[in-house]
Image (cartoon, rainbow, N blue to C red; front, side, top):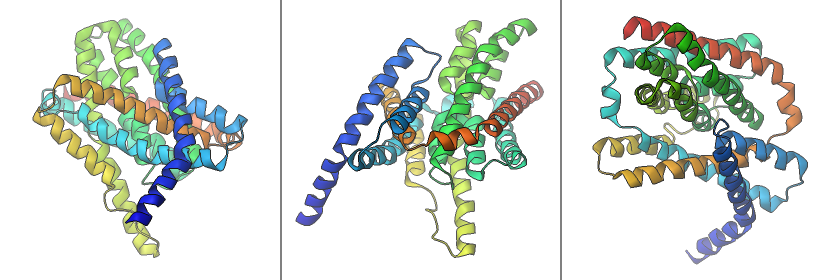
Length: 334
């Protein structure tokens, strides 16, 4: 027991410099995001990580700490994401809207995976873009990356695509909605069903008023709740294929996914006061920001640039798919 304790302290000491670096970068990313609300903290963190990892020569100690931050903070952040979801709020949308959300997620996910294959991008990039665009942007990418075969460059590219096309949708959707004379609830449903990040959804719906924002966020959270079954399903498929090929099997259900589901259950019971939930939301952002900075430091820009044109086409096609599917499904079912 004493030997294990000493080993743990030594590992923590070796990881400390990288943890401090990730903490400082997180503070910078949050500050920049506060000054430029259209630029999410997760995106700023990845960009900072890319700069640090490619401009500076990081020591082995720093890389060890950053790897630990990535592993621990990422999973804790996804678990806490579940505290944003309450079953009662989702049920208030009505059966038609919930079915529409399910169709949007499924069509976008599988359609994007097929498009990635047609464009010749890596399978890992296709899965990550499909998850991020279908569900909830960078948070979904962070959850899915642990159960698919991917390179670090695939994760960074997928997050970049979410930022680029989510920001474009955030700007364009209010203009289109105003031109078409959409009602506040209609615009809210389309924003919640098609825009990628939660912050981008809020910004897209805000010009139509608080009623549109309320609907948009609730629809968006209905997409988020599908993250756990989607990650679990992909993990099960990988597990079955690994068994057939004689390789080491991945976990049946990642522990952090079970934690996410437990957090959803706790939130739905209504036992946590609003200050606790607000603190959890802020902590979620901090954890995921630190994790994505750590991820960014491990990415080589030369590899990232090489996949650029095809990744741009993949993001454009996936954005068109999620938008068209959302408009059609909401019009038919709500």
